[in-house]
Every structure is written in structure tokens, then in C-alpha cells.
Length: 244
Length: 248
Image (cartoon, rainbow over all chains, first blue to last red; front, side):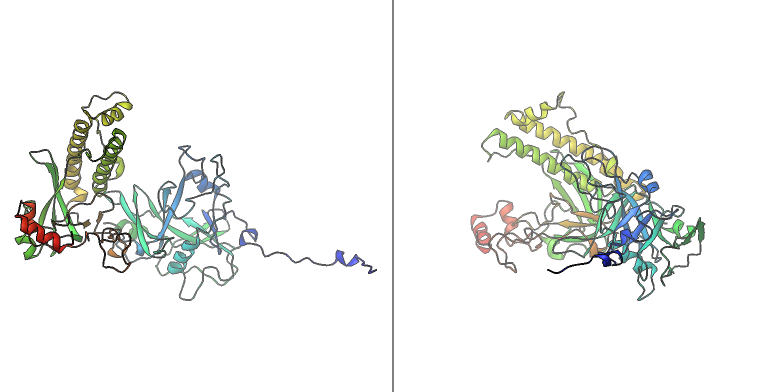
């Protein structure tokens, strides 16, 4: 009979299953002052402040309660945009509209209640956003997640895009399914407000080489506790010229 | 006239009813997109000017081919829905949807939700009800469209429109029943939603994917020789010639 002595167990390290970025440093909660935390796998989580102020939480089906998500797109992909300044735009949109990019859909239980809170929902909805952020804010060859697992994002409410006179918007979208997947299209929106979405660099997320430098000449910097905002905000004077 | 096709730079001039109460939307084409000489020579009376066109929205008729009241009721209700959606789509190019107001049952004296159902299932009341609702929609559409067109923010606004041919025999353009058929020119052509469906291109079950298709190609602006005579009561031989040409 083979006799096993188990003394080694006290010293032996166990192999851990690779964890998703969600479980690493920082968790899902955005830094103070930030609105979203975006991970390299496309998962994205809103701050509690955004959930409360923008009614992001999923509601019971057919409850009639307001529930919103966001459209995100690059300014220069938008045919109504009259400047060549490229930045990422974000606009709140009812979840009941078509092709809402972030927090637009959920899975539901049989009784019509959502299976998870928007604060914890596992999603890859941020993948297109990663592409947009890299396209706009990264230098050639630079990746958004070089040596980091997440970035925090902030809506710049100080620089809204001027609204159209008709309050009708045709926002750029990408077809997600079917034989035309990947091709550009658009969705109509009404009476929305569009803001720049900027990257917030935090101590936890800035351990790598990535520096959110921008092709625009944005200068604004703002300190939010320990959070440094490398601002990608559209200067007010540019915003005021839009649609003029 | 405005040629069949997906046309850029269309401007709606206004809407009105003719003496028979038929809703007409007047449009014209800006830029160099006007009709060809052939179009002008073979133009119907609906063409108002060289680059203009009147689009008729014909009154809603109950379908006599249906043989029971339930089907006739469903058909009538569907026609109302399609008509309303068609008008809504046009108006939404000028205003936000919350500004579009309808009162389709105005003047019908209905007091209960079931009154409309009862009227549309009653053989004697169905057509008069359809006529009244058509008239209400038309009147309210005219007021809203004309106000939208003349609003400061919409003046001179140009659109891209999908305009299929009217029928096999008539090559004049028409406004489709189903949206999307209209979008502002500020929408880039590369992301346009105005496309011909395979059905509209004539594809029918059993056809080879690559064509030729056996159905009517609604994107084809080609005039049919002799068709004008046919539609205006042309001689029998001409009608036969046209039918043979198109394999009927």
C-alpha cells in the first residue's frame, strides 16, 4: 500500500484559474469623479451617481418606468458634425430605442425582472467603445490597454455639443449582426444632448506606458481628489461653433 | 418629372387635396437630377413641371376580393396603419415625433373603443369609415407638413428618397408604402438606409440569386412602349404587344 504524507499541503500553492479583469485591482467601481470603468474585455460599469442621475438601472419589463443607456460614437464619423475635431461623443438614450450602445439590453427572469443590476452586468458592449477611444486618443500603434486592465471615463458636461434646430439627429452606428455586420449605418434620435467622453487617468490604471495624449489641442486639466483628468474635452469655443 | 430610383436632393414643396379629396404631395428635384428628355416627352399629367412631381396617396378602399367580414376588417385596419406610418415617416423628417399629432376619428362620433371595430366589421359602415379616417389623416397631414416645410429650421431642406416605379406599365415614380423611403441629405450616402430589397428588384421564389428575376423590377425607370396608350384606353393590339413583351 502506498502511504501518502500530507505535510506538503501546508506549503503547496494552488494554481488559480485566470481571473477576468473585473476581479483585479480596483474592481468595478469607477474612481471618484469618473462615470464609467471600461475593461480590456469590453465590460463596462457605470458609477452609482450615473446610475441614479441617468436612470440606468434595468426595470421590470413593461413597468413603464424610465430606463436609459447611452449612444457612443466618434464625432468625425457623424455626418451632421461640421468640424474635423475628432473625439468620442456620448448621449443618453432610452433603452427602448434601437441600437443603444451601452447598457441598452439585459437578460430577464421569467417574472420579467432583470437578472442583474446594471452595476454588475457582465457585458462586452464596451468593445466598440475601445475601438473608438483608440482611434481618437491613441497614437499609431498605441493600445488603450497597454500594461493596464481598465480605464476610467468621464462625461464632460461642461462642453455639450450644440443642439440642432430640428432636434433630430442621425447618429452613426455599426451593424452588429447578419450578412452586413460591420458596415456603417445610422439611427435616428430626437431631443438628445451630446457630450464629449474623456479618459480619466488614475493611479491604479496608469501603471503602464499609456498616456492619453490627444490629437486635439485640448489643454484643460482638472484635479479630482487623487484622480488626474487628462482632458479630452472639446474646448467651449469649438463646441459653440458646432452646427452654426 | 422625378425619375424612378433612389434620388438625391428632393425637396417637398407642400401637400394639398384635389377636388376629389385625394391627398397629393408635391415635390421637386434640385441640382441636376431632373428628368431626361424621354421622361418629359412621356410624362403623365401628374408631372407639374420639368423637375417636379405630384405624388398621389389614393383613398383607402376595402378589398372586395376578401370573402368574410373578419378578413375585411383586418385588411381595413392594416391599410389605416400603413397609411398613418407612411405619413408619419414623411413628417418625422421635419419634426420630432412628439410634435406630430393625429385625431383620426374626428367627426365620426365614436364614444367607445369598440366603435371603430364595430364600424370596420360592418359591411355598410366600413367604406364610409375608411373614407372619413383617410380624410382626417390627409387634412391633418397637410397642415402639419406645410407648417414643417415652412418652419425656419427646415427651409430649403433636401432629402434622399426611394421612389419605385408605379407599376409594370407606368414608369412614373411613386412614394412607397413602407419606410424608410426618405432621409435628409445630411445622412451620408455610405450609411443610407434607402436600398432596394430583393423583392423590389424582382426576385421571386425559385429565381436564381444572380438573376434575371421574374418579378417586376421597381427600380427600373424604363418607359414601356405603348403603355401610355394602354393606361389611357389604348387599342387592344397595343395592350397585347406590351403584355407579350413582358411575358404575360
